[in-house]
Image (tube, rainbow, N blue to C red; front, side, top):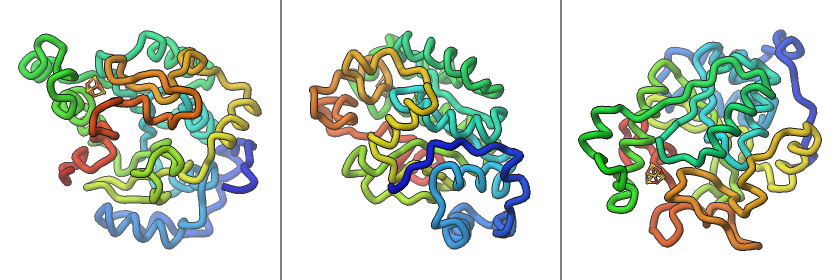
Length: 262
Ligand code: SF4
């Protein structure tokens, strides 16, 4: 990314900027819609892309999915500046750090977010498949399915599109990310793909955003407590997730959310 702008656009400032007929893509399947949006908006990133998607392409039909983790404040801040009533989906797996739950509440108040949906796993499914709460140890993919992927599927049902905070620098599996993708029945928007760690830090400082309290303790990518480790100095942030396992994603980003398979 070049020339990062930390200026936060407002809803009023963009409401008439509809030179591209993004709504013409409505009614298409997710794949065709993503392709249409890439043609019309492929050159946009960051706040400009968010503004177009939230206000023009998917008004009332798009949600931000946030972990309220280490860097989440940046994207939450950008979205709140456009419309603080944008739905935010937070997967409360039952295995999160207490610090994350408190940070969620702090950011909600700080940013004025008015529609944060804390989604819990289905009680009956949890009792049947993880009665002792130790599935993460025996079969982490099955644990992510019952605690993350399936709740996410339910939470996304009312929407046509969702926004993620994934960046290309985070891992080899994310290096080829596009700003607009299709996943099963949904369009997925990745407005920060080319942001660097320095870009994120600059935004956090410029906007004086609260930090996740575990970052200063060495947790650079923060998910569930049993599956998150500190990252040694100089290490990749994602190295702290499922350390020692051949697992790099929880499943919500690899297709099964929409039933399209892993
Ligand atoms: S990250 Fe770990 S604890 Fe959380 S849902 Fe996945 S396997 Fe379970």
